[in-house]
Image 1: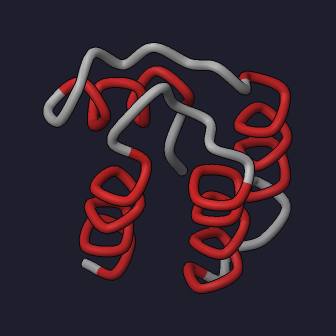
Image 2 (image 1 turned 180 degrees about the vertical axis):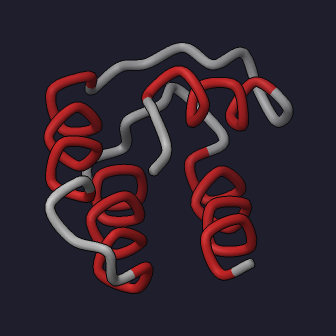
Length: 72
């Protein structure tokens, strides 16, 4: 399971890691802990990042990195 700090760290590799929609990302992280299915976990996280624009910049790059990390 990924934490908010880990996801922010991934975003910092592409931008500054500044969160602009913390509640959405917080919900996604808590929701992913309710399932062991990696695809459902990824769905919660990607939605929070891409649709709700959790970060100031680098949302698509962060979501792509999460896809790679969770699939492994």
